Amino acid sequence: MSDKVLLNNAKSFDDFDDEFELLEVIDEEVTAEVKPLPAESDSCISSLWLEQKNRLEIPLVLLDSKLIIRWRNDAFRAFRETEGLEYNGRPFHALFSSFADPVYRENLIATLKNPESGYGWKDRVVGRGQEHRQFVADINILPLEYKEKAPEWYLAVITDVTEHQKSIIKANFESILKASLLKDEDTGNHIKRVNAYSQTIASELKGKYQWTYFVDNPDDTMLVDDDFIENIGLLAAFHDVGKIGTPESILLKNGELNDDEWAVMKEHPANGALILDSHPVPMAKRIARSHHERWDGTGYPYSLEGDDPKWGIPLSARIVAIADVYDALRTRRPYKEPFSEEKTCNIIISDAGSHFDPGLVEVFKGLKEEFNRIFLSLSDD
Image (cartoon, rainbow, N blue to C red; front, side, top):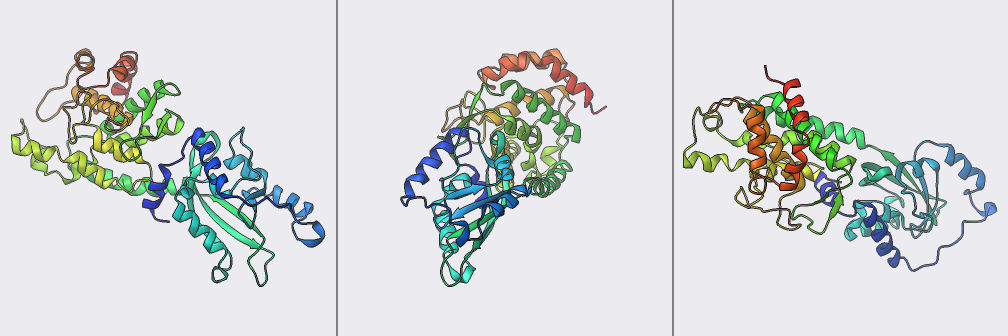
């Protein structure tokens, strides 16, 4: 599956309530009665066989011909299941975000019924596992007991490749980030500080601040969770990656930009969003695209305003806006001397409701000492 498909599919059915909804929707499509497991004398699927499979550390799921879950081992329970949900008797494809796409789901079913495919199917999918953490997994669905007709039973073998996928993606995008830093006056410590500031604010919001996706999926909302906090602590660094397309004569100009130069500079958020379009975590693109938007709608590039679910500024970008401005004010730039910690905080606070989300500024007020500690511990000096 392509990264773009993974990205698009990952936007749907990502939290606990959505899992209930998806299970219900797809369950309505399964009208056939769930048949019993075969008699042990007529099948290899014996209690001993199941017991042996249960000892394996790789997640396994037994499916019938309708792809209904009939049994799963302990490794699958630990990997995927959400407490409070019943899984036996549910459609297998309801458990993974990728199958929210009906075309993709139909392809799965058709492939498993096709003798030319060996009645098997394998691909890479995304979903949510324990504590609602997003995962990437390779699924290999193998037919059991078939001769001249489609099998009655399948075994799904699931391999968690989340960390492997993350390491590849991280290496690729960090290379782009390093290339962008070669052109800018910002240092490596600047992006480390912005990451740390952003993660600090997000940590204060855990479980009590509802955030909204950008217009990609305006109906999706969820609480700030561990994934959000971890992601913003890594992805805030990419806020200015679009400057890789900005001429150095503008980036490094020792003085104010003229109107034409400023127009070119203001292109970097859109350029950054374009560069990060294939990133599997949508937050990366949202931060790059919207960190120069302002709460009152006077920012750029799209004059987004407030936190409206459809046309507002994503929470991740609103957080990074505070982190980026704080660090910019406190550091020396070609056109300015560094501001003091007190002056910087006063500017942030005075711009609540105009430049910045006033709710986030209230959170910032309680974190001023931590911001100063981060700034000093990761100083450029």
